[in-house]
Every structure is written in structure tokens, then in C-alpha cells.
Length: 202
Image 1 (tube, rainbow, N blue to C red):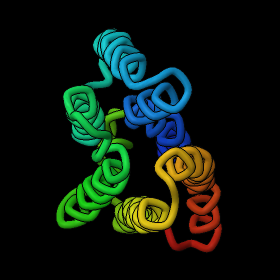
Image 2: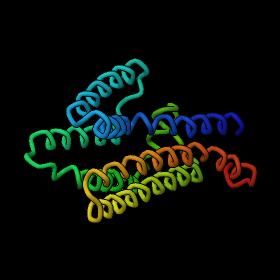
Image 3: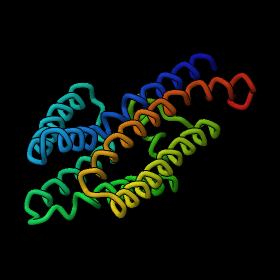
Image 4: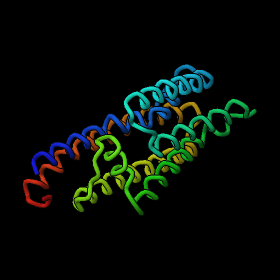
């Protein structure tokens, strides 16, 4: 049991860093867009995706669905922004992105949850313990709620603030929120150990 717990704990810890890379395209795109401009953001995102694809091939990590979807979203929205005569998408693309990601997490609750899939991919193990499966589902649901809340926040900033101010505030809140959620994900290992001490996970 101890060996399995350590393996599961390592997988949960790895989710923290893994989720950052899975959303790396979004993080790079918006960080560069607000600091260096739209064209630099698209170029930087493409460079990141190319480098990360090589890393995933070398380390045999594969390409999770959430990674493919989040990367495709920022590239599509970036191309629309370049060719649009007015920056109408800049005000609402954050809302659409957050809703799409939240929907992806919620859809994953019907089968293997997103976090169970990521943990199994990173660890090379298959988790069948019902308590562990439930833990991964709770983590998936928490991330879905976060992105839904972020979408509501982006709607509010889009309706009540000038575009430049709304984008700046979204960047700060989005970065803080992402860091906070990663920390919560990493702390899931401690929650797992608590369940084990209580005898809730065999």
C-alpha cells in the first residue's frame, strides 16, 4: 500500500507542473499579447508549441486532449485578431476560452476524468481505486468551476471597463488564479495522505 501511495502521490504532484505545460499555449499567448503585442504573442505561442512538442516526443508524454484544445483555441483566436478590422474578439475571447475549457472539464466527468487521464499518462499507471477516482473527479470539477468563474469575471470586465483596463486586470487575476489552482492541485497529495491515515483509501 505504501508503495502504491508513493506512486500515486508522485503522479498527483506531477499534475501541478503538468497542467502548466498543458495550458502553456494560453499562458504564453496572453503574457506576450499584453506585453509585446498580438503578432509577438502568436509567434511566441508557435515557438512554444514546437519546442514543447519535441519535449513531449522525447519524454514520451503524449499530447493530452486538453493540451491540443487549449493550444488550438489561442491560435484560432490569434488568427482572427490579426485579420479582424476591429479588436472585437479581444474583449470576449477570454470568455469563450474559459467557457470552452470549463466545458471540456465538465464533459470529462462522464467517463475518465481529465485529471485521472493526465495522472495515468504521466505515471504510466492505471488508477482503479474508487477513492482515487473520486479524488481525480473532484479535482477536475474544481478546475471546471474555476474556469466558469473566470468566464463570469471576464464578462463583467468586458461590460464595465475600457478594453485596455479590462485586459490588464484579466492578466493579473488570471495569473494569480492559475498559480492558486496549481497550488491547490499539488496539495491534493496531502489530502490523499489524510484519507490514507483515516483508512478511507486502502
